[in-house]
Image (spheres, one colour):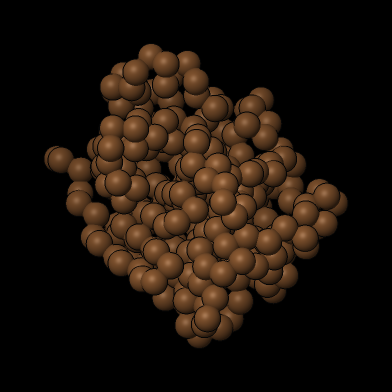
Length: 251
């Protein structure tokens, strides 16, 4: 369910990451190569990026398929950024939230995406949701599983957790409450990228002299894409990528 990508490095046109690659997100919207759940990602898309000297990202999101949006091609051609998060969506459950349910979700300096699905949604997350402040529930950005997962992540960030800690703790909590969930999460703050694998694919690649890409699947056939093992936390900075095994939920 869904495909997503994050980039951190020297400024590039957004289109070089999303549109131009032969198997980029643009093509993955109708022909993903590594997607085990769902076949078409036509329920919305979004691109978020950071401009120099501005910690708050901009976003462009729409409810329809990325291939049907003529404006995206112009935007992707001219917008350059050294920090990007983009996604194409295959909705878990059809809903009326339109582009509000399309990643990336954003609060303050953060961009967030969820590739997967919460098993037993919505009832399965009653207990985790009960631990959120009432304001966080009232401010949910959409009525979908990804929006609630983002609220759980952001609550931890607001408590002082690092990006990696917030993702890891949320994955363990949600997986414990909803066994069988797929929880590949992606979090960007303009300076680092954190991601999890839990039930779906993830890869990373160092672009020589440019930066690092983290993606659900390779956007070309270059041989330097590295597989991130399942149940792993990835944290990427401008200089390094670290992988840490995720713990299992309590029995």
